[in-house]
Length: 291
Picture 1 (cartoon, helix red, strand yellow):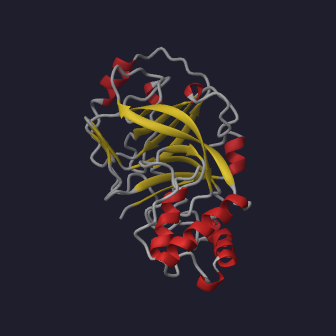
Picture 2: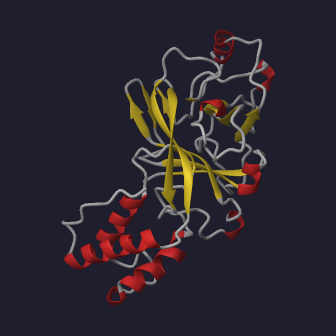
Picture 3: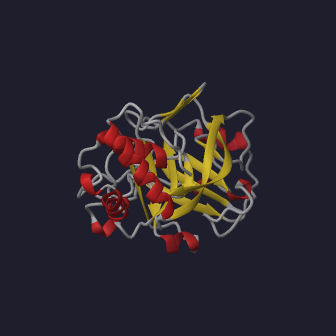
């Protein structure tokens, strides 16, 4: 869970403060969560039901394609086949069915609500419990060939997904981290007391971030979110009900395929934990940010 950093290049007082903080963190009650890490590679020999980023969506009917606010067909951003997830995963209460995330392919925001993150008219989460269809991949691909998607974070192909289980501490990018981390820091570093984790000591703070973040690029299901900028929930209390990360897709590059959220950005779907337990996907927020 911890990626301990070499901090020999930062001031000596920050080196010691970092080590004290991490040692105290290990003994604290900072929340942890299981997550499913997604490892991406170029999609070849595509199948209709498999997990994928981009690519051809599973459909029961060609009429099932969701449309955006302009009544234009959306594009598949991600498809998660729950039967492919590692045995023993606890992110989802079931282990079968397909979860699809669709976004407008003609929206500069890639489906994100501009005025409010709760505006999800240009994106759609769909859960398909019974994965059977009379349609073939070629039939669906042929149908989609008539559409032009002018705005998409995916270029040059699509990715297949393999999964592994992991466990992580509350992300330092999560707005809830401050409330827990600052008292721990101040207790073990009384001569370097802070009111915010960002009150100076940049070298130590950067090392703390790197220690607590999974290996990049950070693609995952469940766990805690990372943001390139600030957590959008921090200053909007009405968004704090969306307490659970569902899906995170990072900027990524691979031979033949690329995901780009602006300049090295990252995207997140957040929902209410009780909705995820009930497999209800009609209420969520979708956000992405960039450097």
